[in-house]
Each structure stands twice: as structure tokens, then as C-alpha cells.
Length: 96
Length: 137
Image (cartoon, rainbow over all chains, first blue to last red; front, side, top):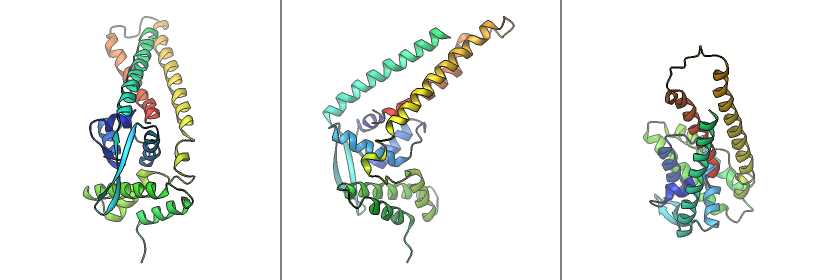
């Protein structure tokens, strides 16, 4: 969900995705950076991301872009997450 | 004569991925990532060698069993741990909020409810973020 979210406005390579995640979350995510690639590959296999290879400073760089299916999935995930989050908040308020 | 830390790391990866079809693609991604990160760290003042080592440390352990099993096999463990933490935290919140109300009225009752809630909601927010990492994909 978060990977799709940070790729929705513009395409990016893995390292750029990590930087956007760190920036957007205020440093809340401290995962080993390499774990992002299996996740990106899975999203691509699911048709939610598409990728292409470009050349950058003599290196091969794979750039990921969100697909229409990815945007649809993101909307659904965000809805689910919001209702989950609201549910927890309400439960805690009622219990407190 | 000696190879730099990024090249040493990449060689290690390639050895483990020798039989894998996707290794070329993933190896290229790892290489681009490590060099980008090292360049960033250098730009922030780290000496080149240290920048490379730090880039590798942030990247984490190489996927020795292949890309698909890198996190795939562990994802459910992460999700299960996050769920347990969430349940434990919820139980802790509930019991901590009930304890003072049963222990008499000498407690600082005048503190507005909003102020009492603030730290708890902050923690909730934090563990919500932790759970969100399980939704990364």
C-alpha cells in the first residue's frame, strides 16, 4: 500500500521509493532498504506496477510506475486501512 | 588491487544467485541502489569507503535464498508479530486506563480528558505505523 502511495504521483526507482517513504513518514520506517525489491517485484507480478530499465550514470536503473490496476488497489487499501484505524481508535476511546 | 565494499557485496550476491533467472535484473537494482545511497552519504560528508559500508548496512542482508524467499517467507512472521504487539498494546491501554478509576478519587481528576488521551493516541499512532509496514506490499 505504501509503495503504491509513494509511486502514485510520479515513477521512481527503488532507492527513490525508499527516500520518499522515509521523507513522507518522518523517518518512522526503519526497514532494511533491500526488502523493498521483493515487494516491488511482487507488485509488478500482480500488475499493480510496471517497470522499465533506463541508463543512469552508466548504470542500469529500473524505474517503477503505478498502473491503473495499482491505483484502483491503492484506493481500496487506503479505504480498508482508514476503517481499520478508525475502528481501533473507537475501541480504545470506548474502553478508556 | 582490492575491490571496494559494494563490489565485494555484489560478488557475494551473484555467487548465490548463479542459478537464478532474475539475478541479472535484481543484481542491477542492488548495484544502482548501493551506489545511489553511497553517493548520497558521500555528499553528506562521509568518506567514500565509509559511505559504501553504510549503504550496505542500510540495505541489509543479501537475499541468500533468492529474491522470492527474501521476505516472502518471513512476511507472515512480521504480520503475526505486529498483530500480537497490537493486541498486547490494546490490552495494556485498556488496563492502564481502568486502573486509576478504581483506585480512588485522590488521583488528579482535574486533568482534562484530552490531555490524558494524548500520549496514548500518540502510541496508537506509532503502532499503527508499525502495522502499516506489513502493508508495504
